[in-house]
Image 1: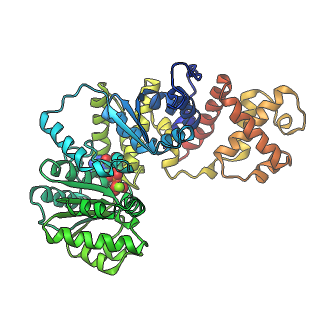
Image 2: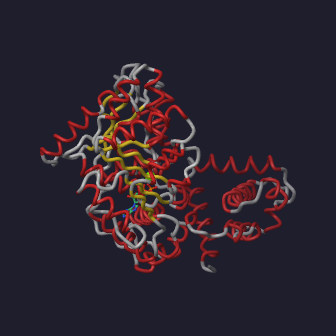
Length: 481
Ligand code: ADP
Ligand code: MG
């Protein structure tokens, strides 16, 4: 998600030595420094410095690892974007680890009621403790208070609220809509309120499947059944993934019926209407249709703008600083980022990160660069000729020199730079690029790209040059839009 930003922001002095230190760390335990080194390599300096460096290692258990960060915001950010990949990195070092728990380090200001309910929650999930379920717990940051309402999601919001006030009134509640429209947000919001007085189970359909298969393998089907049938509220996110797997659908169907019969609330979300679900039993679809079915549609301009405003304010509060984003940038994002609320939130996060890293308000051109991949800007607007001309001008060489076969040092690097930029800024294939660079072979093109990529890791000047050139190339184009 952050790639575009990473590419645009010059590498700063981020070469802290994170060399491996094995002293006083027992052999079996994971070496956190080593994990850091690998995370840095995997995610790149910017993401590492902005987010991952802040993670503290707390403790390692048999098959999971406990980490902490300082705020909810950071936890959520890391969980939603990087956690799976971090787990993969950790598993390179220790295959036994199959889960990460991220806790918040802040002084615990929560009232006792809250603590009590989280205890209940802990007890609730004890039997499934080893599963992936735990990092799928209710996210308190997604609540009704910070759900921004507009035409497209008003009904879904109201129905969700109603369910929390009057259990089993709409049963099941089925919320559907495209990716990033706020379904999971609403599910969390309901779960957060309902868990105070009810036994709740909040699970994604994928995890449900995983748990189902695991329970069969470990002969714990009875526990599995009991567990799910004992809840007062069953919330299943992304039900469309529960396709195929007849035995599991069978189990789900019976669980579903048992719950509805005893007056428990069932809430599901999906990316499509019940009748459009594929490879899901008809009888299940028809059960879904029997409750309240509500869709969330694409946000209109008004809602998008409201979200932009709200998210900037939220980030200001969370970071204890006033974040100023120019009005024209806010309007631009609200106008251009249309596909989903997730993308709008992503766009805001990038723009805000930019303003914090550079310590300045991003202007419109910068915003366009930062958000390039989110916007529908045609990459083909950038031509090879234009890249070659700009690179030649920048390095003060002639185009003939660049395209010649001479291997003088002062020509090789600019040539490789131009090839690299062509590769990343256009959609040309390697042979096509080769042809435009005096019929060079595609292996030469690969070599150039790899060389620059490698140098970028250590050569700060080269990084800065590339960023400058990239901005020049994109900036000129952006002005024409
Ligand atoms: P979905 O489950 O529909 O794919 P999510 O609930 O995960 O979408 O939403 C994507 C992101 O957008 C989340 O960060 C969520 O908090 C945010 N979001 C979605 N809708 C709203 C809204 N109406 N108000 C505030 N934030 C929202
Ligand atoms: Mg979702």
